[in-house]
Image (cartoon, rainbow, N blue to C red; front, side, top):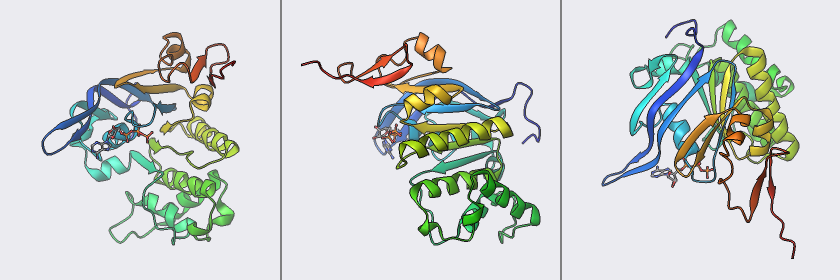
Length: 269
Ligand SMILES: Nc1ncnc2c1ncn2[C@@H]1O[C@H](COP(=O)(O)OP(=O)(O)OP(=O)(O)O)[C@@H](O)[C@H]1O
């Protein structure tokens, strides 16, 4: 892969992408005709109701499952033609529900992010150690580096997973629901942390989330999956296009264009 990003700074693009699952007797299509780009230095939220296809899209973009049709390009290379090691030095994936041993110390878990750069024994060079310490410092967890992950709160553990992706030092970070289980303060804290990472290091972060109101306030762009249709744009563009109007049943939740937030509809009787 190129050491310098391509000139138009497009880190990831899809064209005519269809996502879903091939089962023995049938193909389950989750969404089709997906076309979007992610540029360097963008914080992008992936929004959609339960079961709309957010995890399926992230799994497809990270090469965990094949596309049903169409293309994914990473730094102008076809994803299907990239070697795993090259992909790992360009893109990191943070899954909230992944099986990670919590018997590792914080430092050990974050050091796993260095795997694309270490030898087959996983030996860490001084550069690797420095990157791990730097990542821990970015998420404010240096004092906890020798603690077992099992001793952390959910919010702290979430930050350890983010630090692992930072230590991997990739241009693009994909995250599945990084704010699950967090209280309102820590949800806002984690998303603001992602925003500052994007701003300060020129990395791009694409994260799936149910935090639509926070995403509308913070993100550069939103990818919205609604009834198998995928649209992408800045929050203002999507609001102007009325993209959010049919996301939820109108008698439960309505989008208030003035405050740019979703509000619960309270019946007057
Ligand atoms: N392994 C699989 N085989 C077949 N269908 C699947 C598989 N995994 C998920 N699906 C289906 O794909 C659709 C999209 O699921 P996905 O998990 O991507 O949604 P999501 O937007 O991430 O949901 P949530 O917000 O609830 O996490 C759902 O209808 C789901 O049942």
